[in-house]
Image (cartoon, rainbow, N blue to C red; front, side):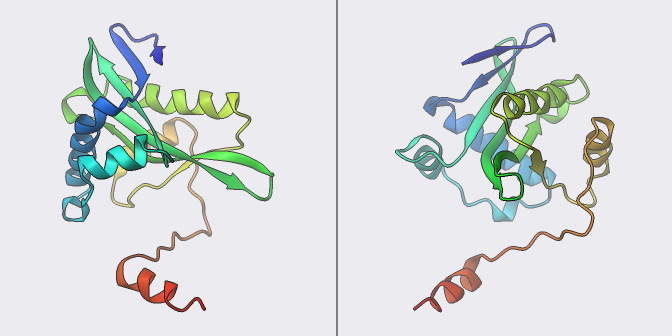
Length: 168
């Protein structure tokens, strides 16, 4: 699906299976920016299965300038038991460094907000590294607020496997 924008020569579109190489490239570039490249273990085969296989776990929007990919947003649905309605969790938002400052990231995020409103979602949420001041400043400029009083928790790797083994 092609999603036109008000920015000249800039469009958004839903990703298709042939976009997997560019999605992986953007994931890797984002990880380098976040100083987390050592954590990327995704492969094209994994992304093909998890994004376009029988049970897609996330959706991707590709941002293009004159037909060339310049960024992406990867998201999935979450759910609020308090409201009884879905939300959107933005896992990745990335625009190539040389294309930042032109409103492309803002357009990607506004598109997700529009999707959320159209689907009767109650929120769009994401995480940001606490040192990433440019992104935090951008998020504040669009009205996003930090979730004071909440701390992200994670169970992964050996700890995930060990804890799963405790289920009898």
